[in-house]
Length: 414
Image (cartoon, rainbow, N blue to C red; front, top):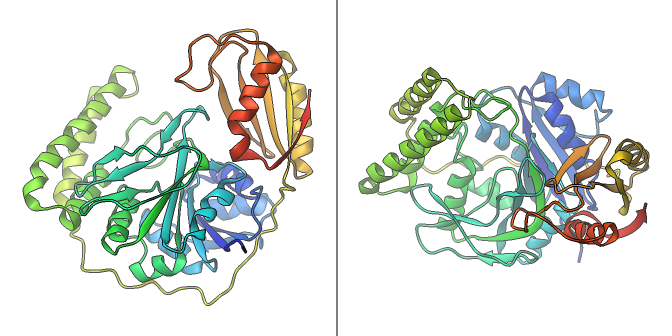
């Protein structure tokens, strides 16, 4: 069966360095037919030029602080059968599209979402989740190595994450894409609810994985400290007006206030916020709730691309190389990894110290994965604090942990 063509939309505003890391990962996907669409401001255009990707990445100029409008601009420029989304502060595993697009072999699947790993590159920020009419999300149990098609009960939807999701282009266009009333927060959740209401099915694809780092923005600092909660309040109220019976609003709004207050107080406790910053953020939350725009009627269909598809020539050969050694060889291993990455190989570096330190994974330019940690330390956070085993056995365990998301064929180096 021929793989569907995929348009990847990445929105970036005032984060050129993050965009470069994201595009580095997207330029090394193991997938036969995809294009990259960057909806970005002038700083992003410069970053793309500096990477030598001018003319290879489709650039849609956009410099407005509205994630929904920006994504819609990307959708209208897309020429693929499928439109996939990733944030600029995320990087994709090499087989991300291979797994995510594979879900659409089922003709009943209109949307798909994958798992999202967090800042340490190992723990998950989000797995499978559902959402109810208040916008509250809840976990869903699925098998973690196969795609699962879910049909939620009335009033609920399967939640996909904006940094790791894909939809059939024709469905997106017909539904009007993302609602611009959601400048930030709940934008994809609103789309999930509209998909469910229209009877479309969503697949959760655990092996379609990205790593999400939470870069700084107008709403949060690099250390994730809150700057502004206005859009959280405005989007929450817009969502309730669109999807939730009014009788349920007070309970949900109280829960929202408590959630955000607890979040802010935790940041104050950790020294990230001053008391005045907490009070200001809570005032902005209330201001957003009070000044939220009312959702309009059904969205008008988007105008689609007439068929122009800018196929990206992936730099990945499909060959994977493992490099492993003790931590004191890390610099040498990274040098070798960079050379191999320049040749188009997918490279994983494992550098173990004789300790019980927790493991972490980082994506490094020009495009390789570095896992560091103690030979006796845990990687998955549910493991015992102390892992017993020899170097070779530990390496086998860690390579097996990422094999299904990172490579198809493999060569090893020691």
